[in-house]
Amino acid sequence: MEDEKYAKELDVAVKAVHMACSLCRGVQRGLVSRAGDAVKSKEDDSPVTVADWGVQATISWLLTEVFGSQSVSIVAEEDVQALSKSDSAGLLAAVVDAVNECLDNAPNFGLHKPDKHLTTQEVLEAIKRCNSAGGPKGRYWVLDPVDGTLGFVRGNQYAVALALIEDGEVIIGVLGCPNYPMKKEWLNYHHHYYQSTSAATDDSWEKGCLMYARRGSGKAWMQPLLHGDVNIESQYEARLIRVSSVDDPAQATFCEPVEKANSNQSFTAGLAHSVGFRKQPLRVYSMVKYAAIARGDAEVFMKFARCGYKEKIWDHAAGVVIVQEAGGVVTDAGGKPLDFSRGVYLEGLDRGIIVCCGSILHEKIIGAVYASWDSSNL
View (tube, rainbow, N blue to C red):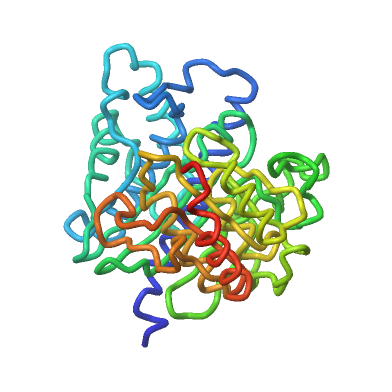
């Protein structure tokens, strides 16, 4: 019965993220060739693209279509303020076009498409509908339409992340990683961040992957990203993924964010040295770090935020449940589980976030945090 309880939600979420990734790939191809109207800056100066708003509108519309507007509550990153300004007419038109093109392909992904193209107002309403503030009670979806926007704009790693939270607990997590190849050997480990090698071309269906898990199942799954012209009814089977069994720090690979703005990398580097990590860190944009650990490409992800920065639930919810169901451990730096029940921020977070493939490495890192903290400059 437990398996059946969230079966429909998981099925729709997986299909919706496949569709969202299809939209993103199209936008990213255009961005790499011409960086122009497709990017708008938010107040915090991080770029927002047609894909951010397009994905949010698409997933909002799909969830509402399947489950009904009264039953769907969504916490998501983007709002419509910048998109509604008079100087954003071209950008808004591009978003509407991207959404309608994506929804036209819904039947290929096993979902219904609208009877007619959505109007500009309907697209804005779908984005606005994502106005939940989360909290400890009820059911709500958590969406990061393009996690790692800078990676996306630069033609690098990014993720589409969708999670379902019920009474403050993450129940379902889906992570679409359009530039993270199915095959580990297609990754070039000598770059500062993951980058697909020339072996993974745009028309290769194994260039991207999607991972998903349901709380309590003890299983996490991965499948190649579907393309718009591939009918989901003939989809290839998903395969189980598990975390790495490495427990020796000298053999372990750890991930950290590429961007230094929100992360204290000097503390992380000192901590890594004291634990005994010897390999160069993998600096990766976005929740792709969670994907790397869930399928055993890396063993540890550590993030210690700079003073004043607050972690948002949409940057972690989907990745956390996938890593946990794949056999990994996720806590704050004090060893406590992350609390998703207190609104849009991870309130009460003790110093940072530690994601590990297993308890042995996790305990060593927690011990090193306590030993190192007093001398740090955080």
